[in-house]
Picture 1: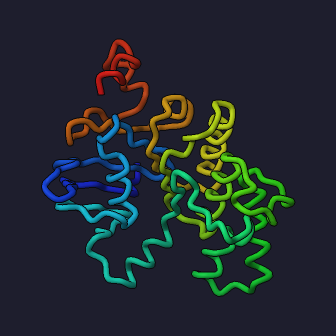
Picture 2: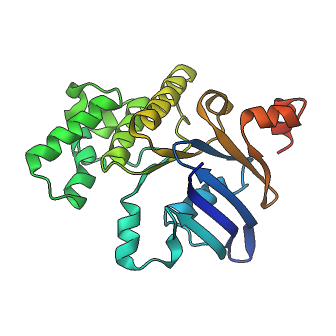
Picture 3: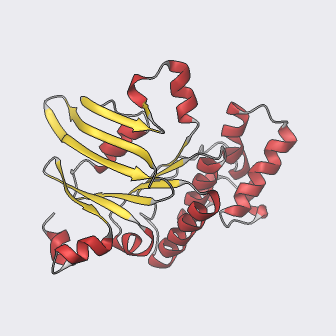
Length: 243
């Protein structure tokens, strides 16, 4: 399988506190990969090292074959355009409408005509399962599930090669969470992208995740598929309780 993210001997820290210590793993093209672990295990810190928000203490983060923390400013910008990010609470701009939020990256990073940008934004709005009538709404008028979908549409607007998700189903009721899982899998298949998610939702893991790592005590405690995990532990619930 083709590797799209390679983490090599990565150590991260905040001051003297080490979060991860010499961890290594790969993420492959077109797979949905989960970062799991207990509270404080460093899931979000690890995600942040891959999206230019947290520089590692040592080690290498390779994305699309490039060490992202050794790139020039121009190369960094070019790399960022290959990455779509959906933050936990959507991170929508409250002063912008739904459509304006989705249009924003297209306006910032393309030379498309304004009318084409509007049409593309509407296309993404519909593609993530929202109605065109919601385009004029503002974030404070949206349900939690709608906020997630708008954030997803914005994250996908520039056709990234990798989609990063931070707790994508948090705050959603079980039915909405499963619908969002299905949407993520649909987007992966349709766009042929890789998906990397931080999650604590084991139903998401069971439903759509191809492979995962569990973080514990600064190390990778487990790496593999759910099938691999079932073959190694007698009780998944007991395993999770001991993380």
